[in-house]
Amino acid sequence: MGVGDILLWGVLPYVVLAVVIGGTVWRYRYDQFGWTTRSSQLYESRILRIASPLFHFGILAVLAGHVMGLIIPKTWTEAVGVTEGMYHFLALSIGLVAGVGTLLGIIMLIWRRRTTGPVFMATTKNDKFMYVMLVAALLTGLGTTLISVFDHSVPDYRQTVSPWFRSIWILQPDVAAMTAAGISFKVHALWAMGLFAVWPFTRLVHAFTAPVHYLFRPYIVYRSRDHRSTGSVPVRRGWDPVGTQDRDRSAHRNRAGTRR
Ligand code: HEM
Image (cartoon, rainbow, N blue to C red; front, side):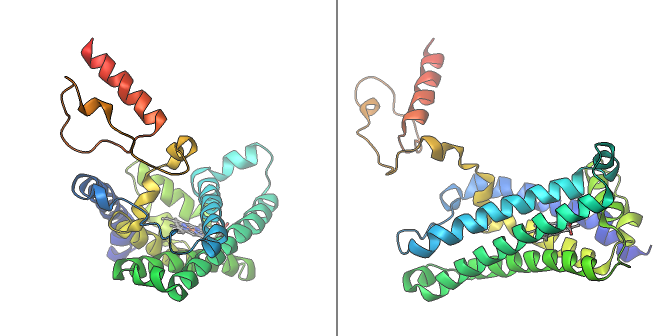
């Protein structure tokens, strides 16, 4: 274990965490109008209708796989009767389907972006950089899975990468565990950290806004006449959320609470 290992697996994760948290707070405070997916649905929706859910449901499944593989210790899954063989069969089959689905989704999205004139015009350098980071994270992830299938000499990630990942959160980074991991896992984890570091500064920031509100939102978002601005109710400074019934109800409750 050298200085390089300590820097990569003992220091870098915390630098990345600081950038993610600091960057997100900064973006929220100074660029709320830019906190958006910059949806291009108005320009093209035929391919988007298939590619977007494919990508988004795929990445949610990939995320679920990572929670299972990185956060849940091997001893726990064994305690509930999931053998090593069963675990790897599930990880491989479901993981590959999820990973390939996600990759297919993003390839379709990028192809749509390149071939649909207005969508391409709306694509910034920042977006292109983000696509490279995202696709490379997916490819290196799929690479780790495939390499482990064919090369049985690669150390089990549940005894190397996973303990290291968990150790970060208790502020006792297990550098030795990650140092012992296969090179493909190291490349993947490094790339993922790079992706996390740029996350708050790209369109990916929209992922931090859980779209629960979408369930209650009208199909067309419109601003109705604002009755509050007339009469004796003081006008609040700044922007109000676009009027939808659920938000209006909670805003009404809050106002009623402050008047009491
Ligand atoms: C520090 C963060 C991360 C770590 C430590 C990590 C670790 C791993 C490990 C150990 C595997 C192998 C799973 C298996 O073969 O069963 C894997 C697979 C994979 N990873 Fe990651 N990963 C991280 C972040 C990411 C991110 C941000 C993405 C995508 C945006 C990603 C995408 C994938 C994909 C597509 C696979 C293939 C298997 C699957 O679909 O789950 N990973 N990762």
